[in-house]
Image (tube, rainbow, N blue to C red; front, side, top):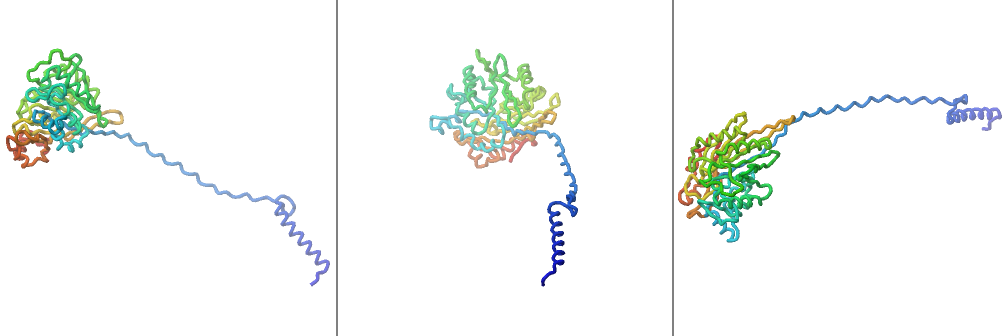
Length: 407
């Protein structure tokens, strides 16, 4: 259909109007040609993120540290023991490991193991037995391997080889690994040979004394010697010097009546006096048979513990009772409060029996835990039969029930 001229003109006007609107819109102009006003975007306010709740400051807690400690009695080395050790070492070395092998696993359960070394140890003097002992230096290889790290040397045999024996013994112990300590010989001018050892954050101080030296005086010309339990002025000074520097003060005493299960008055009075001076643990040796133990209350109110006699650890003595000993098992707990206050608790002291075994003619001398000892072994014991029933009778009659552990 053909459009008339006026219709064509009208269409052009409409088209131009629409195009202008579109162009103005694109250029930001309104229909009057003025810039178009854009509507501002509406931004909804966001809520502020909450402040994190601060964690409460933890209350300071006490620090608790523990050490499980063992003490073993007289390591009394007779001829049979060192001759058998030499044979097992092929004649070139004293292999004592057989004598102690049955207890090696037991000692691994402790943090610190203490032993009364009853005889002088050195390689200067020929080995000898009763009455004046000297033990080959190789024995300390076996003792160290079993787990002993603390050795008490003050006893009635300390002067068996005179001044030379003291010197030779001190030289031997000085060559031990750094984590092994020994005490019992003191500089006779200063008396300040103090021994400390720190384990699991607990510092131990050790002193070692004897009641007698078998009538042998301090060897002439010796710079070192023992301190006897009668020398209380020296002991009091040593304990006062050491007490501020250790958490636990352990004093060993070679005392009592040999062969007797009865605790004598000297032992009881001395133990109380030592507790009053600051001792925490008092370890008794020398009678070669077992005696009981006791809690003590010191003058300042602290609690101490004493074992009056652990008996023999190992020996080649010849009576039934000297075959029976006990090992002390005790735990020390140190609590340090946030303000720095320190307290020490002695926990669960137990006496664990041991038995020395040998066959006829003192063959195969060795030590067993009583829990591993059998009547078959007892029937084969040299010199006598040693039944479990007899051993239990000795133990229960000499050690208070609260401290004795038979299994």
